[in-house]
Amino acid sequence: MIMHIDDNEEDRSFFRESLAAVDIDVLLIEVASAGEAMKSMVQILPDLIVVDCNMPGFNRLEFISNIRQNPKFNATKIVLLNTLAEAKINPLKYGADNSYVKPASVVKYKLIINELL
Image (cartoon, rainbow, N blue to C red):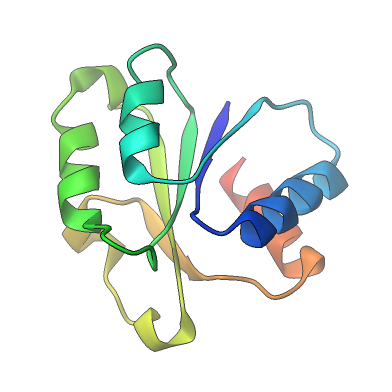
């Protein structure tokens, strides 16, 4: 199960399209905010959380820290999607497993998705 957190519907749609192009059988949960994600994760256990870091009112450190404090999510991978300007962010500093510059093509997204799964 993959949870994708992004406040932009077009970006969520692009991720969905890219995931479909990889042709794997995976459940995708889409949410528009960290708050929605936290509420959803009370009932679900994603294998992978893909987080857009450029959301209004979003504190990636607090969000990831909250996840990492719960042993239930020890095996959950967390990946940050950054803008080119944020590309030098060290994901480990935030408790994430990796970070990528948000892809601009389905082909690049497919490469990332294949790497993660």
